[in-house]
Image (cartoon, rainbow, N blue to C red):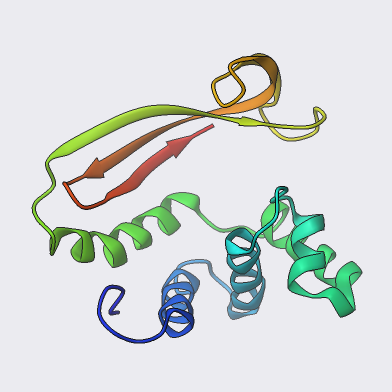
Length: 155
């Protein structure tokens, strides 16, 4: 996989998602994975499956919503395997700019509307600078002067 050299972004994105698809199990999950990743990349304030379905398949939003919901909530795939695949594909491209110089441990809060997402509590939310409904995740990233890559992530 050549993430940092030539090719248009659409081709590189397709190659990246295909690489991730190799660790998610059944081949039927490849399209929902691509649609989910596409939804994450598209503009829009909300990144839950309902608005993502409307953006990725406007002519068949209800079916797309069901497909994305099943992919995220019910399909059995390992987030550890996906993160390992991301490291395998991306770390060599980062290391072309220099060796890894630091490990970064960080907490990140995500403002949430409502209380139905996993881990949502009324707590301090750094993005808002006050207490609000949010999720908090802790990540471990590796970094050099050019880039960083999350290698572990827990809600």
